[in-house]
Amino acid sequence: MARTLAVEDGTVVFRRSDGTVLPLHPLWLRERSRESDEFDSGCRQRLYDPWRIETAIRIDGVDTLDDTVAEVRFSDGRAVRFLLDWLDGELDPADALPAKTPWTAATHAPNVAVLQALDTPAGMTMFLDGFLRTGLGLIRECGTESGSVLRVAERFGPVRVTNFGALFEVRTTEAPTDLAYTSLALYAHTDNPYRRPIPGIQFLSCLINDAEGGESTLVDGLAVAQSLRSDDPDAFAALTTTGIRYRYDGDGSVLEDIGRMIEVDEAGEIQRIRFNPRVEYVLPAPPSALAAFYRARALFGARLGDPSFEIRLKLEPGDTIMFDNHRLAHGRTSFSATGRRHLQGCYIEHDGPQSLYRAGRSAVR
Image (cartoon, rainbow, N blue to C red):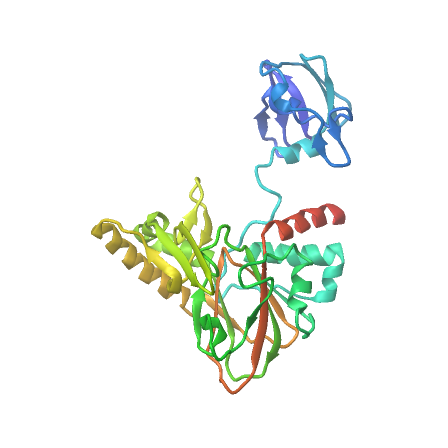
């Protein structure tokens, strides 16, 4: 069925190719003008302020020019042409990104690419499609020289500088300022929950890894949170409502933020997890509320370490893992202190990869 735009019973309606009929507000349609004197095709911004349009504007008529274009005549005297395919896209509430796909150890599908494959729009878009769905990607053949992680990350967006610098080292040191700089096992956690904003995406590049042990562990916090919501709604509710102070106090920095262990939007959709027991301090609350929270936290923590949710990966020199720090919890197994394990890491924000994906989708169509 062809898309159409028409006036029916005094209301302008858009009929989609699946037969769905959507009524449109005249001003909503008017402010989507792409006429050359109202829209700059170079910077792709309006040349006027839509709030200045008369709010009681009407549609005087619609003329169908062909199967792809309709012209709408408005009461302010303007006639605006609309590509029906483009208008259909404007009616889609999604953000043009692939839907997140929760995964477990049994359902995880590897998303792997060599660095050179990301040089083409098609290769980058394919890799980002997997990353945006699963929150995880592995990039091989990235080099083993110091700073290679920055060159990989900069392909996706500007590097986020923190008090640890643009780049941070993950290796054993004599006087560690963080447990990451020891050979101890690290339980599944998310990074920097005390920052505003929390770094969105983390990269870890392997320079050396000849120590026994030291496997990277990764867990889809979205899948874990959804399982808890399904199995124990009361526990899920406690984790989405109890306030927690996340605090880092070291190396001359004092960083704090207050949030929830599972954060949801107004529609109840899971947006982010914050799980980092070493820096979490629950805010005062009635004992009954805290009892519910502590029970829920124990359940959530146990599931984040459940092998049925966890995958393990032994990074090889030249490998870089890229993961969503708002969604995935990561850790590692312990390793021999006599071996060498040297990783370098950095952060970027979500908007870089998301922008690349949207641009890449347009380029390969």
